[in-house]
Length: 325
Image 1 (cartoon, one colour):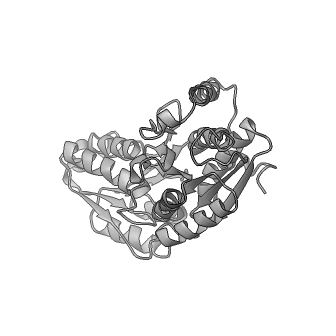
Image 2 (cartoon, helix red, strand yellow):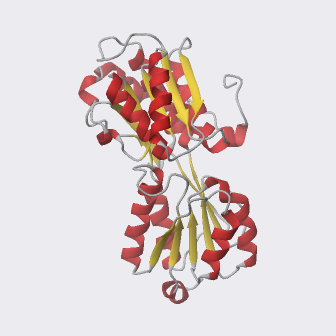
Image 3 (cartoon, one colour):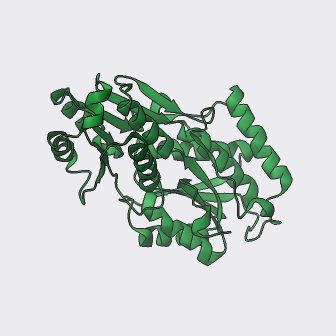
């Protein structure tokens, strides 16, 4: 689409499960969207639905019929519907995150979440057995709570488990799924059960539900690990680190490319550790609580991933490993 045509058409951002206000995936992506829209002088609108999964095709067709020139979709379950709808609206550009879908007017954005999650797992395993760290019982037990049992979520979880096991082969990683992304009460209950079962650190990969995991860490004197955005400040001192996924950068980039007439249709944009697309937070509130040797080890692990010395498992490309049952 030419720059002139692009500038005349508004752009839409379809919000995923959990909605705006999740202090995580949706909010971070929306921040990048707003920034790009303002700088490119475009009209932009977020699109929310109470039944975003079931209404996939309807939501996409309504946005396309409403005259949006670009539709950025954050909802993972919309992948197949988006690929189908895009065929019927050749004059509209589409972006799908976290998967690859075909179409000359479809741009796909992938994150190497497994790389950042590997670092989170490595840190969690090292801290869990260190009784010099406040609240740790010394047992090699950690946990992770995913929003749904799906390849998109398991990409995080498998990377986390691999990182933990590489640091300590004897580590036990408790895995559970909340089956939603917008209920902090369920996250609180599930995380407390994990902490009661001996877990020292619990990683949340459950959007708004994960806010309950962080609350549980705060209430029980343990650690949570945040996801997508820097959630360390949600409960200062109770969040060990956050696995940041720069959806804001991804969304901002594709919207600006669209506005400039350079939309990457038919292409896949990949953001990993090397592109600063994923990584751990600066640990503003916990950095001084973690032994220097542990932080040095995590930096060393990061370098080994970047150099290719450590190969992090990717369930999207490789299926499920034997260590994940």
